[in-house]
Length: 84
Image (cartoon, rainbow, N blue to C red; front, side, top):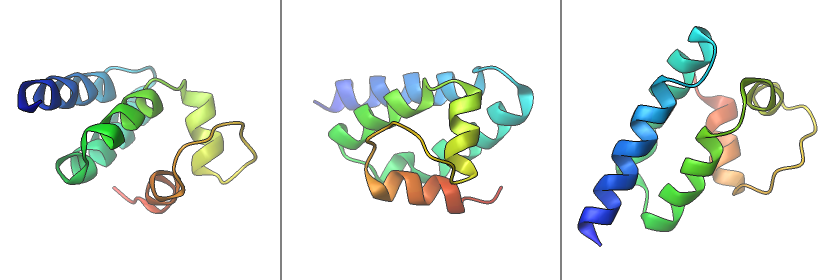
């Protein structure tokens, strides 16, 4: 399990840095680094899905606009309130 957890963490960190627009890359990579060490394996899997959303969808979430995603409230709230 440890190797799997480290592998998914590395994947998430990498993906958060190379997503689309540079602005969202910076925001997402900073956000991921701020929370990744505190997550269990299931939460990491969810974060992995979250990081794969396109920039427009993440911007909707960040701006608290309606979206069709069922991520945990804690993840959404922490992303919305995150300041670089």
